[in-house]
Amino acid sequence: MSTNSSKKQMTKKTFFLDENINMCVEEAMQKAKKGLKEKPDEMALGYICFNFVADDGGKLLLCAQRLGIETTVEILTKRFPNLKVWDERPKREK
Image (cartoon, rainbow, N blue to C red; front, side, top):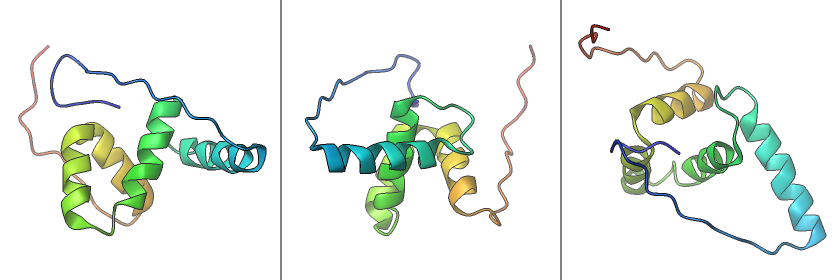
């Protein structure tokens, strides 16, 4: 997942899952990856978690801040296809 800082702080998580739960997790991860520009597992898991907390505005805002603007916009436009998003930031010269 991207962060707003230039240096990413990464955390490793390890889970032991029962076979049936693992199948469910794998299916959810594959579904989450559809339509995402970047498809690593951490992006899919971030998408799933983002959607899980989407009903709680405070937690959603915290997640959005931690994910960064690009990832947040990508997730929101996938979840809400009719949402119109535009970027008004000044263009950087190369």
